[in-house]
Length: 399
Image 1 (cartoon, rainbow, N blue to C red):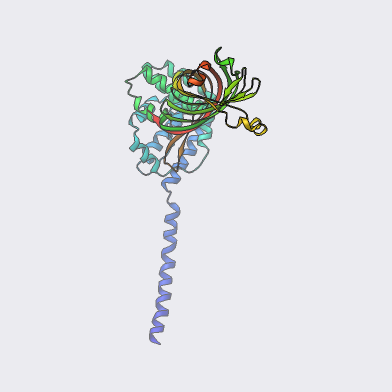
Image 2 (cartoon, one colour; image 1 turned 45 degrees about the vertical axis):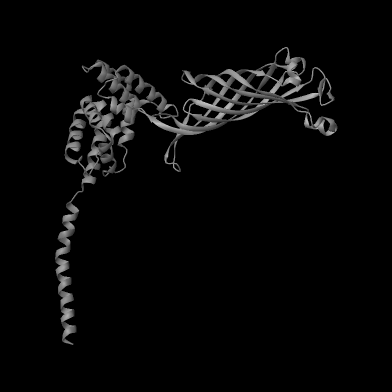
């Protein structure tokens, strides 16, 4: 009973102590403002002063915010927001120094910091940028900075003002490459290559397919026996870099211009003939201008002539007829219009890859050497075709 009484007294006493201390703690907590909240307040004040076009007050708030709260734990402004403010305040030194200090370690630290709460600062800054982009450009060009510094600042400005559509990165890459070519030993080279120009190029193996159609023209000797005709073909493309190995096969819709004796049976003039022309060739792509390329072609081709399947069904005597030529060299040339490669990151292979497609105009000349039985038909074949190619392959970043 005594133990029970002591327990009741203890509980009542502890409750009294709690009731005396808790309001004080609560008051202290209510008076405390977290760093995250202070950062939000500063961002709101900066936003208000940008709207009011008060540059002096904005600069004061900007410096206070960066000096007091930007540390190893907190990010006060996103890089894009900071750049726009700097352009507005004509504070180019901060952009230049920040770019020169940036590396993969610094980028990783920024990424791991506590981010600001979501607000409308970026939207306000972006509106300011749209209104003043020409003024920002003129100020940079009229500044006392060197031409190299000015051109670098103009590229940074371009990354902020270029419309974010499907052509955005190609436009930025073009300007970045132009800058790097103009200033090959620039102090901004590392930053431009790593954080502005995101350009990729094919790497390693690729695999593709093609469909093509055109015409096959036989020279005077061979055309005495077979008609020239339309072509429909299909092929596989095995690529490595700019080299392509082509395994192709096409059918030519032809007919006989003369009687052909085959194993004591006469394949009569006027009959339909199906020519099959397989090919194994190698070509190398030379880039002429952006999407236009030209490829010399070298390989081996074959030639086979046979009656149509329907004709064989109607006339069993045609079943055994097949006239083949020996393998012979092929030479040619192909002009291609390459559409922009679509680069993407493949999560399965854990590496960048690309998909490609192109329209191609191809010309080839092929010898047709028959064996002794049909040597009087030896000649040449000219193949002209239009093809559509598509495929996938590995890619790498171009630095």
